[in-house]
Image (tube, rainbow, N blue to C red; front, side, top):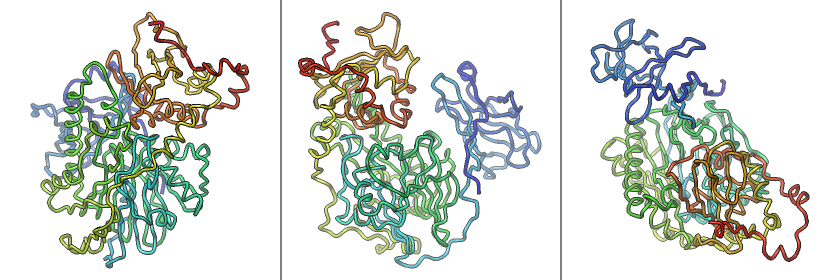
Length: 595
């Protein structure tokens, strides 16, 4: 069985995208002559091949359609509503296979085809009856689930200790006391993506000391999940990079398949587990898992639900970003997410649904403003909405240590014995996090030798490799309250020519001002880390002029930085030795006095 692939089937430039009218457009690929249908609405774009699913006929515009949503097949007059991708004549016949629509930084568009689109249908298995106790799913914390599948123990995304995103996220739920023993006893582990609330090096360090050879499965993403394993000093010896859309057989009864995300294929993945023909779907953090095509009527589905996993808008200030604007925006975004997840569950009709992967808290006292502002969805509210929309789906709001017996739940969804809650005296919420241990490690970067030399700035941004973009960024090192440090750096980067001017250039340009906590920023610079630690971890404050999101800039520093960190040893060999008097004053770029 070959790996699932993605292929660009049509590219439009910005001018061609602008010329698309609302409703249905037909576009031909000039290279191979194949034709595609694009539907434009206020909600964005949808696209599909110009090919009827019935017998492969070509579609034309339907002159009877006044809304501009329907096309008609020239063979047998079948009609397709392109806004829903449903065939309306005959009704309830087929769903049209959608193409993934990718919008490009320059305003262009690509249509992408996943092949095969439903890889889980390869080699189908008839479900066998499950015995009581044969399949048990235990929620540990956040996105970490332990699956007992017959004799095998399979663990998802173990973040069991320490913070994520530098020092911005901490575990909300107290995992069971033996959670690290369970981790080290696992037969196999799946890590969905490289974000530190899923790939937790403090957690994996424990595993490396006790069982470094446990098979850890990751998807074959363009940015490797373990891109910085060497830098982490964690020794793991059995990482298995797995092709997308291919069944991986564990034993006669158990197999799994990793799928890519349609929106972030370079990074995000999700997984389907099949035990004796019973499917468990875990979409994790995927925005559009498998390009929106997922198996229906699985036995158990789990997904994220909470929202709040971004610095926007909490870390933004100036202009419209008042507390009341943020509160209204967050309320609307959370509601949209809740409705989207509930609608997705309704369309896929799983037997059981479990919201997870949203149980984090901005617990550090310095982040009280974020914690108070960044209101998240509750699992209870989502499940209540699902119970209304899709009453045949059983919902489960997990507590740490709670166990779902899949066999019992499938036999009798109303059975109280299907779910075992943790003991009444079990601790549900964490109330201590060892802040100092982890914050001190980050702050140890402040005194690194490299920061005694002002030229680290040019060395670092040259290594980062982002330029030819009309954006000027001012970076200011601050204390925990985002007050500029008297002995911190304050500098400009002009990304048009990668220069470091003392004042903003005279030409028209986009401008961003970023205040970063000094310990986190220097740790990220020193180790060549991704800026997710700063942005998703709420470790900076941002203002923009004009108020424009620069996807190309943020995407580069969040996902595209070089796989190997800056060679600071080489840097220190190049720079002249620092004088002792200079060492006392290093890092002062008095930008403020210039203004």
